[in-house]
Length: 224
Image (cartoon, rainbow, N blue to C red; front, side, top):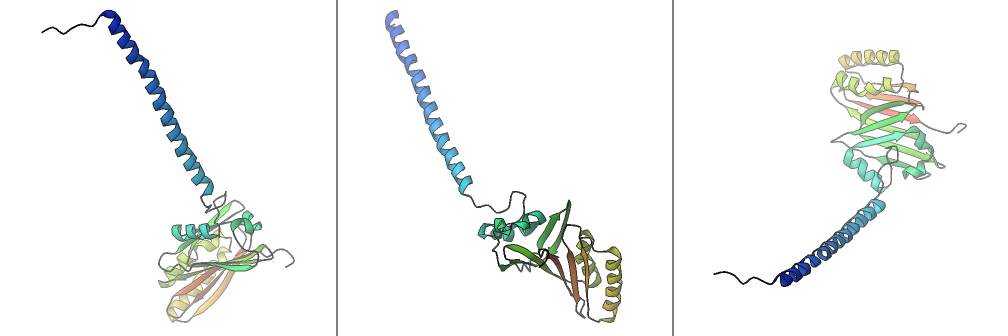
């Protein structure tokens, strides 16, 4: 059976009606997509603006709630010596002792940057002393095991901080002999100035061969 054909004028009118709707539908779809995208971008921008800042612009650690949570999660604590001139910008109080740690199961990587040098070492805790709006002292503690070899690894950062190599070598000779005899011993080495501030290292070893190693950076203002 042959279908009934519409007159040419009727077909033309129908085509015009159908085609006339197409641009309108497309325009509406584009407008809806644009509104949705605008809402998404605005939402993301708002999140970025309100998100807490965990580190400084140079990547140094901050010590407010967001910064401390970030340190605990990443197990990395970074100091930029230049930024320590304005501790309040890093979330540090004007007069206090701020302690990070201890982290016994997974050590903290402590990094100092200054004068073009960057030195890092594994520690279990860090103490930051501020007085009158200035950072005066940063000290760290690390526990080592494994006798002489563990001590050697723990002291690897000392030369990076600028501690005299001959002093480190002499101390390791002492440690080797004391470990064999089982006698406790302790020494302070340094300071070194490689990162722009004096950094010394204190080592105290028990008769069992376990040692505590502490690095201390002194930042007391001149005349204090």
